[in-house]
Structures are given as structure tokens and as C-alpha cells.
Length: 233
Image (cartoon, rainbow, N blue to C red; front, side):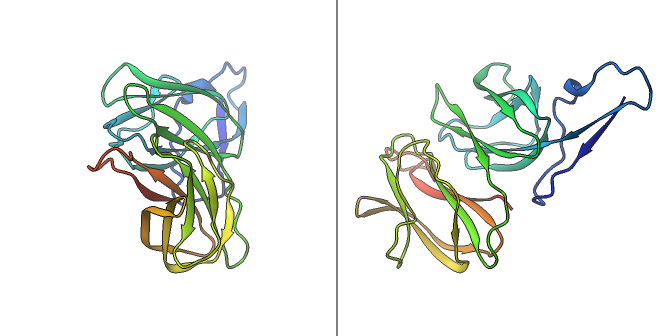
């Protein structure tokens, strides 16, 4: 059987790694039979403070041998559409820490954020809108992934308009358009108090970003509360 994979015209970060390919195999009567499939894009971001290195597993198969630690972004992988089971385990362990059944649509991109803390981290699957921004603009969204933080606002220093208001843990904003800048300082606010910043952040026209609140309010080490940015394309 021949299987033709139609690639997705998006980001240079897309790795055409076809995990769980055995699921595509089916009995074919003729040598030249083939099935044409438009793959989905599935990205992974480690946002679980204190959890350590993880293995990513889809349909009981390990996705990659790359080291996947806190705040890492592995980019997109090609994924077969339909029902899949996403799982995480401690590095080189056979025991799942969390699983999530998902249904991936053809030609659609998703980000799977590993969130929460041990002993019960979670997987949060978010659909990514990778439609190109308006001419001369960028697109951004905001996700609160800090387990012990209250509802958060996101601002840009020196601007009077709040970008996103009152995002509780696991809340995902829609994408909005934003002017590009060589050096924005993004601010997380709790009421009128600035509790984290991401200074000197370059936002480029034509690109798409997710800003996410990370870490824990209760710590002062490498897992402390802060703000990170993910570039989708």
C-alpha cells in the first residue's frame, strides 16, 4: 500500500515526524493502492514546574528522543488525524503521569501544554490559529499556565490599553492583532500590581506568538512565577 501525506503549508518548525505510523497501515488488495491524508500539526510545550524531564507518547509510541524539560518547546510534529491518545511519562519510565484522548482534525494545528505539578500534571490541548496576520501586523494570545496564580492581566509597558483581562489558570485567550516592535516589555498584572515582566521582546510582522504565564507564585527558584513567549511561525 502507498500512503501519500499532503504537507501543511505553515511553519519552518514543522517536523514531518510521523509517529504511530503503523495506525495507517491497512490491508490493500493492489500494490498501487494508496490513501491520501492531510496531516495535523501537534506541538508540545513543557509548562509543568518541578516535573523534570518527560517522554512524550502518542498511541503508546514515543514521539522523540529529544530531552524535554521545563519551558522547552519542541515545535510541531506531523500527526495523523482522528482519535489519538497523548501521554506523558517521566524520562525512560513506562508509567504514565497523565494521558489525554484527543481527536485531531486534518490540516489543523494544536499545541499540547504539559501543565500543573506532580503528582498530577495534566495535558492541555489548544487549537492554534495559524492564519496569517493582517499585513504589517503580528498575532498574539495569552494563556495562564501558573497553577497557583490568580486571574491575570497582560499589558505592554507604556500603553494604556490592557491586551487581555482576568485570565484564570488554564484560560486561553483568542489571538489578537498587534503592531510589531523591536522591544516590547510585556507585563503580567494582578489588579494594579505588576508581578512579572518579559522585557526587550521583539515582535515581528507576519509572525504568530503565544505568551504564557509560567511557574509558581510560591517558589523563588527556577520554577518561580514568570512570563514566556512561544513563536508558532
